[in-house]
Every structure is written in structure tokens, then in C-alpha cells.
Length: 313
View 1 (cartoon, rainbow, N blue to C red):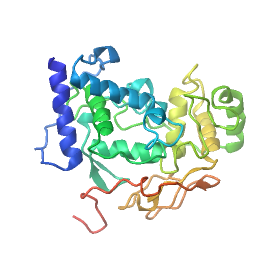
View 2: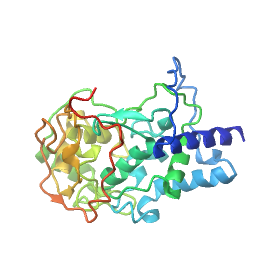
View 3: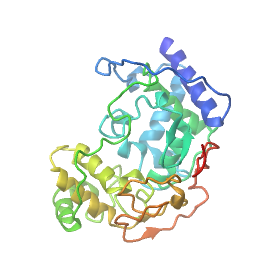
């Protein structure tokens, strides 16, 4: 019951932040958090009450995203394609502790964003789909699950993977020819030679894969995911250069466009490997072509009122 009450409080705070209602005093960062002693809640720990029903629905939306939310997840990817082990794996963009990290400033948006905004960036960019209405039952269920797996993680806690994918130690340049050879040797058994995937195995390019605006469309981000997590039968078995080669090969293929991408990093400072033009940045190794989105308006996440522009103080 105590955990259920705490999770309910977290969901209420997230909802207020997402809807712009009220302001919260800044929390003092926690000096020490023993991540080794902390255990992420598992499905078996979901409370058997009304909140538990919402948490479980949120978990299932992450696991079966295109089947459950066809109007919003229009690709063949699901949240757990990247956020593996139900968002608990610390080398695969973990979702644990996410409630302790939002609201936060996001340089790509040039704005302070809520957790609901961040969820919608995943839906519109990584899933190449459409934004979920912030006050909807679906968004509430997803936030309930994220609150549940953030149980007892304090604001300011330092956690492995809190910044998303772990940065590669060395930034290398991938070779697409070598990447093709390694892909055909190692990856086709699951992802197919044409990259289309198979059932729960996600497509890596084409109209049903992630968009050019997704983090995975960046060579270093994709290399990090590949090196730490692939192949699933032997993660970490590739050399870093091989991971960059495979990432370069995958990201050289056509993929969905990301409407509004030209407005990213409005203050400048886009990472070197962003594959499209932004303020002061030339595209880095863009894909062969882009697939137009059927619902360009739905693929846009409205900028929060905190968006900054040059000259703002």
C-alpha cells in the first residue's frame, strides 16, 4: 500500500508538470544514492489495486506498442525495442528514475520539457508515429509505469544510463562496406537481409523503422546501442569499430522523415553526427532518402512555452 501511495503521488506530480498546472519548488539534489543496493520494481511487484491496473496497462503499452496504439505507433517498433528489459536495462536507454529527472532542459528542443513531452518525442521520432494527447488514458498509463519503476529514486540521483545510451569512449567513423559484411554475418539471422525485422524483431530501415530525427539515426548513438546490446546472443562481442561500421551501414538506408527537424537545437550546438541540417550544422552522412510522413502534423510535439532563442536571457 505504501508503494502504491508513493507511485500515485509521482503520477500526480508528472501530470501537473505535463499539463502546465502549478509550479513546484526546486528540489534539493540528493548527495548520495546507493544504486547497487536499489532494486527496480518488477512486474510481480505491481500493486493489486486501481493504480496497479494503470501501471500494468502502461507496461503492456511499452511491450506491445504498435498492436495496442496503432494510431500513435505507426511503425513496427515498440518502446521495448530500444528500452530493453521493460526499460530496466542500464545499457539500453533505461527508464528507471525518469520521474526524478523531469522536468529538464533539453538542448535539442531548446526548452524545459516534461516527462510527457519526452514520451511524445519517442513516439514521433523513434517510433515514427504520432503524439499521444497529454491528458489521455494512454499517456497516464505510461506515466504510471514510469513512476512505478522510479520508486524510491530521489531527485538528483546519479544512475547508470540516466543520460540515455552510454557514450562510446572513442568516436570513430563507420565504414558502410565493412558494416554490410558484418551485418550479413551477424545480424541477418534476426533482422533479415533487407533490414525488415521479423515480428517483435524491429526493422532497421525503411518506412516502418525509426525516423531521421531519432537518436538512433545518429551514428554514435546507434553504435553505442549495438556495441552494448547486440547481438542479443552475445552482447559486447563486437569491436567498437565494428559497431560503428554496422551503425553506418544501417543508417545509410532510407527511413521516415521527421517533420520540424530543422528547428532542432535552436541555440546551436548540434552534435557532429546529426544526419540533417540544423542551426549552424551541416548534415552528417544523411540516409539515402527520406520517406514522407502521412500525418506530418501529428508527428510534431508542440514546443513548451520555455523554448529559448538566441538573445534570450
